[in-house]
Length: 332
Ligand SMILES: O=C(O)CCC(=O)C(=O)O
Ligand SMILES: [Fe+2]
Image (cartoon, rainbow, N blue to C red):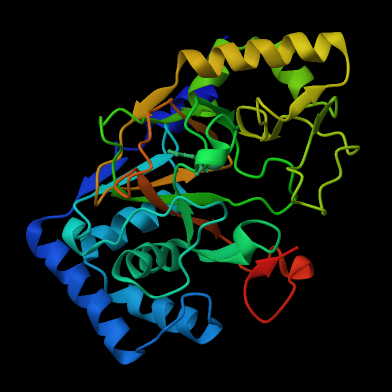
């Protein structure tokens, strides 16, 4: 069932869902990263003082990049994604891809600094204490013991989900910077936006999906999660709703709600796209309107597997204040 208001709203913006840096802009980003790292040798990306420096430094990113980030922050477009290409990632300078669980990057390496500069420009990068040791820059890498798991360390198909769907302070945006692709170049990040899927749902389903007839489990590591709290999987503006669902962790509390949830999954699958990230690509996903996942792929665990840096962003840094566990932006 299509909605005139909704269609109008998403089509009034020109498509700015991707931008590729020119080689000159790429050189400029590289110089900024090096300058920041020279001014704070041994910098740690989790250090609140380093975060402030990165925020200020990010104001000198190339103006076209600043424009794209600023625009996406306010208008995620129909796809709810922004892809930035040709960021400076130097394949030859990279160490082996890590293959351990809970892998993170705490040092201000060039790629970690790049991800942080963009993240700190678009909003406030934060982390959860109970995930990846509370580090701000996560390594998304295949891990042998997690191969078949529904987690970022897996290599089976990862079902569509909002990031940390269970958490009241889940990210507004997530950023994924690709350092290495998988060997066969086939690991696709899947994404699907409720802004596109909404028109495939009838109004009765939309109304039902807004009711608190769903529960979403937290991963075992998160003590803060309370799966007993029921919630709607759609919320906010009826014509342009927010979505909160994890097709591996959200359950309906009754049969009618379960059927609507299945139809939502079908609609999202119908409008889903796949993006194979290449080194130097950074994708931002608006976690309020987009669910994401990943196709299966075949890791070799030989040090040259797929490797992404992931950052979580809040658009209002005060949003999670009551959940903070220290001086930095780490939430319980
Ligand atoms: O591997 C990917 O492309 C995305 C995995 C994922 O869901 C995540 O890192 O949050
Ligand atoms: Fe995810």
